[in-house]
Image (cartoon, rainbow, N blue to C red; front, side, top):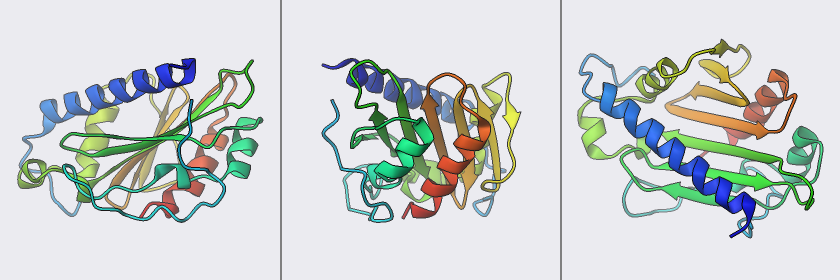
Length: 198
């Protein structure tokens, strides 16, 4: 297992745990309104083709590695990135994500986009009227040092090198694992990826 794949599994596990914890803390809120609201994977050369495909648990899935092109990733990261490693975390929220790593053997740069769509929530969450907005707020409440960010989605905030966005029944996170990442770069990544989510 490569270092990048190892890190990818750690990130996926942490994300799943964090989101499940937020549901456990706030999933029973009946006041929330439904209206609030080595990587040989897919090659990221053409974006916008992230079509929904049927899956078992957790609703329809799509190829998250199609949300950013190779040229866009190189611009954001400042170096060439691989084709991406897509993953779906099975569970009540159906987290879909892609992790890209630098092609250079001497670089540890990682980029990631993760998507949680309200329409993919399990029936139990839907019956509790749990929404993407509630998930976004619950997740935000778990962090300290949150920086609110304008210019993307209905609401957005940055924690570390991660930008979390609430947009049209979805929570979308973009991250760039390298030093000195500007908020504007994360906003630009999100502005490219978000409209391409089916």
